[in-house]
Length: 151
Ligand SMILES: [Zn+2]
Image 1 (spheres, helix red, strand yellow):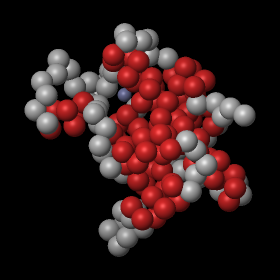
Image 2 (cartoon, protein in one colour):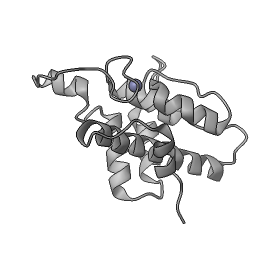
Image 3 (cartoon, protein in one colour):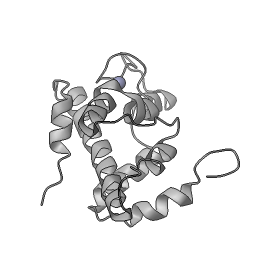
Image 4 (cartoon, protein in one colour):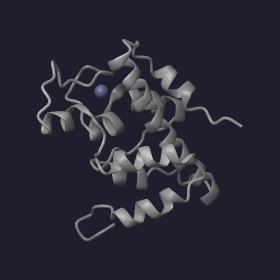
């Protein structure tokens, strides 16, 4: 963390690349952290006219990286129920990932926990795209069923 209280990219990216995950998941999360997804607010910045700017999952506020991957109630309230504890919600996606750990877990346990974060973010994006582009139905259970670690 730097003097302004923000998480440095180097603190996040180096451990991210060490996670044992398929490259496509890591690249997706890297793009999320750099705010490079074609999310509503980024499309508007590029001059794309849209019918709505509202989050397609909760339909409560504008869709931004921070909203979808940190604050969207459809995603994170379900995640907290599943975990059984509240998650500290940082403003920055980098800080959210960097501090996504559980004190009772070992280093290896938290390594798996980071993998879970990456998986939830990746599957949230897949579910969001299903809702937006294929008239899918918002279903947080589906996000978590997609995020199950497979052997
Ligand atoms: Zn939302």
